[in-house]
Length: 85
Image 1: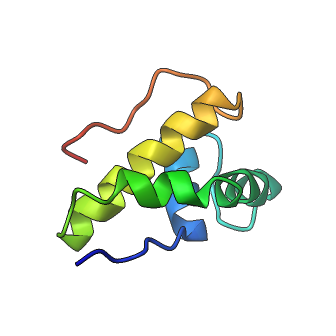
Image 2: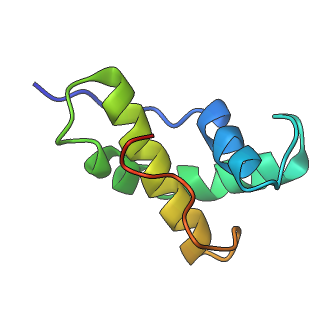
C-alpha cells in the first residue's frame, strides 16, 4: 500500500534552516521555496515510494526537496541532508 506525501512548509523551512538561509517559517524565502517545491510535488511523492516508515518517508522527501532546491538555484550545494537524516 502506498500513501501520498504532502509537502509541508515545515519541511521546506527545515531544509533552508540547515543551509543557514532561514530563521523562521514566516520568511519570504521559505514561501518562495515552498512554492517551487509544490510545483514538482509528484517528484517528491515518487521519491518516497520505497519507504513505509513515516520518518524514512519524510527524510527521503526532504532529501529530494533539497536536491530540487539546489538544482533550481534556490540553495547553494552541496547537499547537507544525508540518507541517515
